[in-house]
Image 1 (cartoon, rainbow, N blue to C red):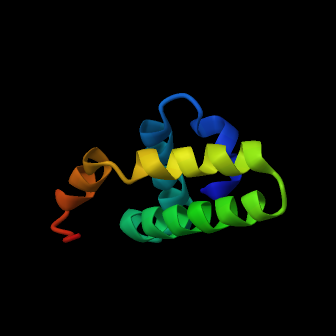
Image 2: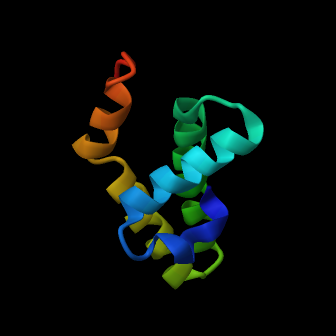
Amino acid sequence: MREWVEEYTQNPLEKGKQRCKYLHCLTGVPEQEIWEWGYLQTVSTAFVLLQIGQEKTGQQMLHVAECWSTPLSKQSFNAKNIDY
């Protein structure tokens, strides 16, 4: 999920959920697991990019991760009885 940061510029939460569902359909991996892994990878990649001087992309990725961590994103997965 972390590789398409440009696609998340407009409406990061909705685009992230769409990508998550797409990856679930391709792999059969539960959406919650894809979401969590994608979030962690996005944050960690953003930090690496910031360290190597790629400020713009690093900040974009942190913005996406921040949008993904909103209560709304958690609420959609809580419907599946997943606790945070």
